[in-house]
Image (cartoon, rainbow, N blue to C red; front, side):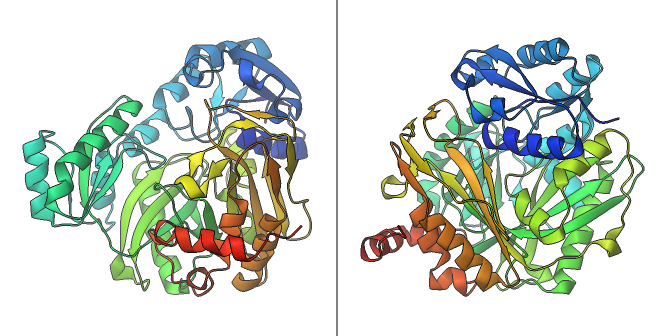
Length: 462
């Protein structure tokens, strides 16, 4: 039996989960902080429960507040969305103690994959290739500096318990290591764990991830890969499926690797195994990076290409249902690209731009065009929360057509009262590097000035 489902999140992802619940006829219950009392995700749910003040620590990150809301509402299931508590084993355990079904993997699987060093060790044991690195057993600055010298520069410093690009520093040479280590530790401390690990950095890297599903009956399969190479501040504003330059043989190999890791930890639910790759794509130039034990922001591109609703299968798997299809049943049709619409200023290093949306125009959904929004005109964007307003997803028979459809949609976006990244992303989608599949993880930062300059020459579509 599905539902009632308490959605322990806010904004775009809460509204997106509610969409699937409505289609399935499952009652959904929103939660809201004082800052979100009139938010879109609250009005799209069947019911809503208050959970406290605006600051996330006292509301969306408060396990007691969320458990109280679940008890008051009579919820049977809890969907954590992404971000906030979605990868906290303690939250999954609290749900179990209260007799609630947590829509996600077991606490044991979350813990196994939650720390980057621990996940790396499990991946190596499961036969996945990993980059040369150091797990950070000795956290002294001297030991880490010596490890970096052994690995060789450039080296990447990573927060062991981090996520969302926080606590990561690329260090091109020994001279900058000490300062980068201190900065990475400061950011890592946000997660309550300032430990770091090291890996050899990959120049001109591609970021590829594989979506997996596993049920409680032991069936694990993959839904293909996504390319998340376009990044700023180690976060991904554009994602696509399938990855440009991906061969069927390599897709099969990466899917096999991802499923092997999922089986090794007894994974149940939806998850994503992330890989770092060196262009051109080849099995010997793709290495395991980490596993995310939750729904990914970019999951809609996989849904558009496979025709599967990943949130629906999260709910069904959590309720004990077996996957009714096998690997050979999964087909990939056409190409999908997603852009994250954020209130940020590309001209000021993508600085967040909170404020009141005095005017807002977003694309309307149409054939091959999807909008997952968490805001509307008149809303106030709080500095307490993520700057993402919505996601625009385009699907077409070819990659070129999908890129252009999305660029046109983005150029039609209008926001007054905040800065918006829509025109900048449209310019990136139309760049020669993107059109020809020659982008890497440094492209957006390196080409930022050129892309911004192009906006002054080509006015946005009215």
